[in-house]
Length: 150
Image 1 (spheres, one colour):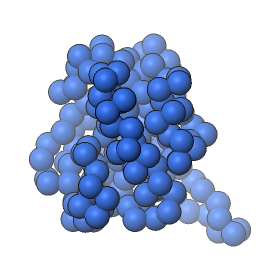
Image 2 (cartoon, one colour; image 1 turned 120 degrees about the vertical axis):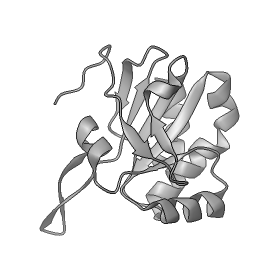
Image 3 (tube, one colour; image 1 turned 90 degrees about the vertical axis):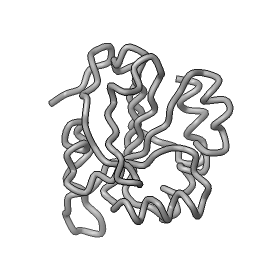
Image 4 (cartoon, helix red, strand yellow; image 1 turned 180 degrees about the vertical axis):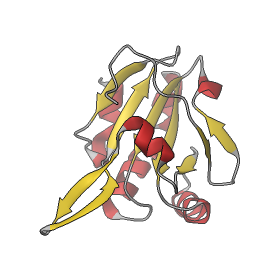
């Protein structure tokens, strides 16, 4: 499914790091930064999460809510959040359901090997639940600037 700017973002029901149910629709009235990343505690993913953490004040001032999504387990997410003091929820998409809705679970190639994995992508969703922008070339250390400048 191709996602289009201005069209509704796919709603989902998933579990966060505490096993609590989280849906996109529960954030209506807020702008949502839904960012997909490959794995907790890896250099690029940590840089991206910490950049979003460090700019939380500016993001909140612009009515943004941040939600991270990876295929890591709830316990790995809890560890990642505690280790880096992350102030936003992380979805444990262990079955790739949210990834599939957003088209971020794709065939990847690395050193001649092919495998399925997460394509680092951020979806900015407006207050009405529509896609405002899609950031495919994520700069992990400057990600909040990419979002605030979008």
